[in-house]
Length: 122
Image (cartoon, rainbow, N blue to C red; front, side, top):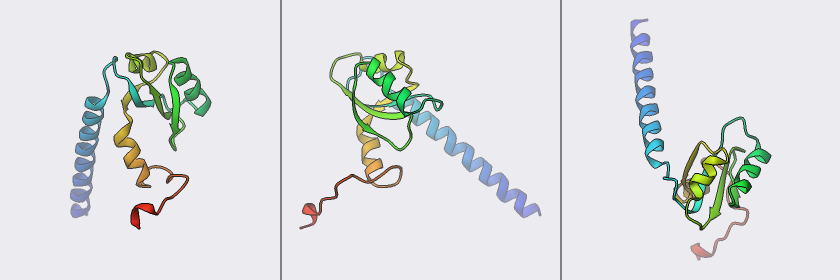
C-alpha cells in the first residue's frame, strides 16, 4: 500500500511539473499585439465553430484552416496589429501558426492533409 502511495505521489508531482512547464511555455509563446501574418487564434472553450469564425472575421482575418477543436482557427492577415484585433474579438491567446501546423500534420492532434502526395518519396 505504501508503495502505491509513493508512486501516486510521484505521478502527481510529475503531472504538476509538466503542467507548470506547459503553461509557462504557452504564456511565453503568446504574441504581442502588433503581430501579423498566419496566426493560431484560440477562443474560449465555450465558443463553437460558428462563434470562432465570426470572431475571426470581425478581426479582419481570412480563415486559413480549421483545427479539430472548434475554438481554434488558423487565420491570416498581413496588417500590423492583427493579434490585438483577434484579442479584442474574443481570442484568449494568439500564437504563430507554423509550429502548430507542423505538429497537426503529423497526425497527433488533427486530421492529415486532405490530399496525400507521394512525390517527395520518389
